[in-house]
Figure 1 (spheres, rainbow, N blue to C red):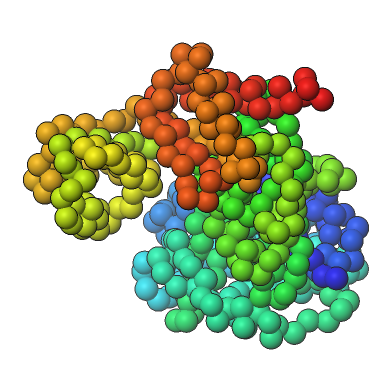
Figure 2: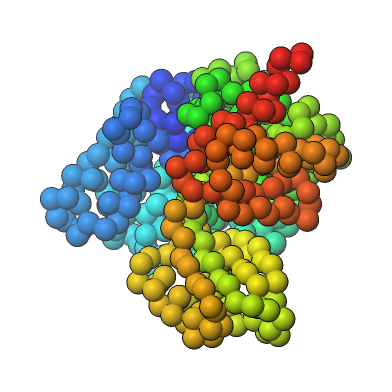
Length: 458
């Protein structure tokens, strides 16, 4: 049975890493669809190819900066090609595309940056097909144009069109070939390249798996599993053997960066099992992300994480909840500024709106608050920058009602103040708000309560 297998940028950063990827692909004949990211960092202070392409797009064509970045881009791909003894003649195809990237762009100027960025994956897929062919294996490049992977929306945050799945289902391939697919981008109906959000190669893998009716999607990265907590906070945290789609979405949203939360959606729709694995340790079992019907919780919670990129707006006015249309007024103001809110816990006299800081700036906050003050006339209005969110997630939570009280007690008994508690209707996640200085301590305390305690009992 065919599998989709995706490799991240760190797995494809240089010739040595590339060789590991090739060996993984060839080790299993079911690995038929290979989705590749652009080459990532080779060392800590290195620059990712995607970031080089952004610099390239923003440089004046023909300038010293432009030519320097062009040379570096060619060099990054050429070093990998030379590692596998790709001929200069064959590599010239890639070098020419890079050299002519600026002059070859045509169409809506809004798509120019996306066009440049998409070529990181586009060129890497061409190179991977070359390498596999050079090694004597039948491989073929198939980009979004060939697959019929169509998108719409913002050029840098595109969404897949439903007809893409019909197109993919019709894609013709033979039993003895490996199809290499560039991640991260799709084609608009006008023939423009548009990219998904950063980390979008994960999304491509899920789309391809769903469209082709493939039930196992292996996502190779630089860690051996998804862990219940950030290894930078907890030393050697417990690894998650198995988790559900919705657990992964909740944790990805709130700070887990192993797998893109948007990429879960096509997998859910196609009931595709995802296996997160390590390119450097491919023998490790990794973490399976599965449908809810196939899942049994091993621990009361599956993960705990904190995220600092939030702010909160607190409003107080007596009988605030009785004002008809109050929420509508707020939403109209958010629409005016083209911002979304993350959560809106409320009481009879109080309301807190939580925002993702990454869509705000100081000037916007000032104008936003002024408009809200005019529209709602609150007695108290306070913008809270010093805010972190702790997310506790687990399918086992709704079966054991004491989990939340246990988690809160582990914090309050150790001096961590809680400013907000919000539980989703699914009852598999609870969000706690506190000051940023307490974020890591909160994660550590909750982890110790639920996981170290279980180890001792075992």
